[in-house]
Each structure stands twice: as C-alpha cells, then as structure tokens.
Image (cartoon, rainbow, N blue to C red; front, side):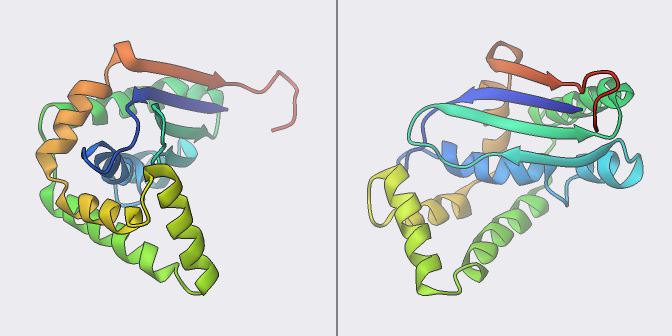
Length: 178
C-alpha cells in the first residue's frame, strides 16, 4: 500500500527561493535524518520507505511525500504522523543545525556524483533545461545554500495546506500480490 501527499507548488525559478526551499524541505521532512523517517521507518517500522519526489520543474508542479506502507492498517497512524510533522514545521519549530547539515549534504552529494564528464554534462543540461540558463546548476546550489529555517516555515504555511493538497492512496486488491 502507498500513501502519497502532493501539494501544488509554483514553477522553479532562479529569481525566487521556492525550488531551493523545496530541495531542503524534502530532506528535512522525510530524509533519513528526519525525526519522521526515524519514527516511521526505523522505530515503529510502519513503512518500507518514506521519500519525497521533489526536484525543480519548469512548470508548476507537485511537492510530494510518499510512504510505502508495510500494511494497510498502518495508513491512519502514518497519515497522523506526517500531519503532526507538518504542523510542527508550520508552527515554526525548525532545527537550524539540521537545515545547515541538509544544505551541506545536498551540495556535496551532488559533487560526489560528478565522476565523469558525462555526469557533469547531464547535470548541467538538466538544470539548464529547467531554468533556461547554462549557469543554472551553480545558481540553484547558491540558492540552496541561502535557504533559512524561517523560509521552510513560510513555504509550509503558504503551500503545504489542505486547500492545495491531493492525497493518493493505493491499496492492493484483496488476495492480490504484494
């Protein structure tokens, strides 16, 4: 079973911080260092995986959180835990040290992935295609480094709201393969 939350978000731009905020926010909410990941994946073991499908898009897109549930009966507690984490964020409780660590990880994991000229070319082309400039990758990384904890709160209050939310629930048919 899957439980997916998707909020409408604006198109990525290098002149606004939205794309950079989403990059940090995805790891902040459901990355392997997040309290939610530790709770749902490691401690309570209610989900197989917890992730975000968040990357820049040229057009308005969705900021998604995706939980692969171990069992259907875990849907309600998983949904409640995600809601609680979002409410905590919107209330202004943000760990500034974790934000800095996530920014560092985003920067250095990208750099570590650039092992061949082809890797570099693909990344440069990907970001240039989205943002429309050859300097897009560098500028996006600079924007990520400038994200402040209060921007995560503001983004959550503006975009991660019920009126902007689509929930997708996938449940295997009774007797179907798991």
